[in-house]
Image (cartoon, rainbow, N blue to C red; front, top):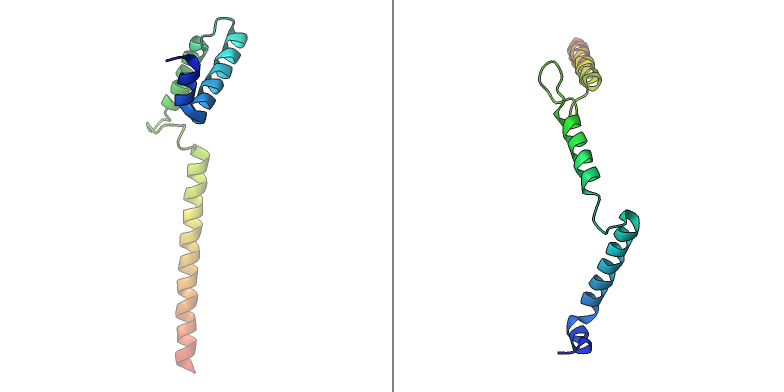
Length: 102
């Protein structure tokens, strides 16, 4: 099978994929000089991410996932909501007493 016949069997999608891969590999060659992806920098960056994700606070919770300041703010907000609920219950009881007094 000749080159023209092979191209005809690939179709438009296949030819497009080949062209895109050729351009990407050409870009990597021009960027790195040898055509290989920068594996050492990738490995270093992955290791840095692992270090960031592996840090824990004093309670053993991963710092990456929960900020102490955010946790404190949420706890204060929950306390305020509970206080407001108590006030609303008290106001509701007072309104009921006023309605029965009529």
